[in-house]
Image (tube, rainbow, N blue to C red; front, top):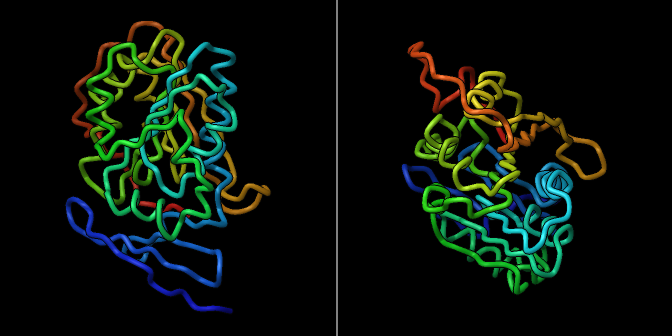
Length: 249
């Protein structure tokens, strides 16, 4: 079997180094330390993040999507395939090298989707775009870090705590959907979503599009639920789930 070859690397905020690896002619991997964050052969759950969200929304005129995390573009490509010609998709990617890889060595995987007129790529923290929005998006899709149990950047926890979820709810239009990818289940986060005023569905999906690989979780949280319940001060740190960290695959 062919060995992995490092193509490029990039430091990330807060420390650590992302590496882009290639094996053979067409398999790519992005790693952080000893953890593989994504692999070009495993796209099923990333695609499901977009397809499940689009199905939940149904037919809407000029739907506006915000995708947090570019990755290898599987969520973006699936969204483009599912959405109409008048859709608008903004992708927020914090790490410049990931955007450069998408236009460079990973261009065959992206298959020109970055040039689709419906797509805008923002080199930005998706947290800022969410907090700047008020009834702006029909859907917010988060494939950031390892899910609520962060692995890469500690600041990503701001997306998943009570304040972050309140900001996401405010940024959604009526009937909008907050969809979140995670490496594994997290009952405390499901409860946090409900306490934040979302109607929540938790879906388990396979990493591989053919139905194999690890089981990942996608939360589909609708902003149609009743007013959030009052928070109880239990001493819990809501920004990070309890338990050990999980690798993405």
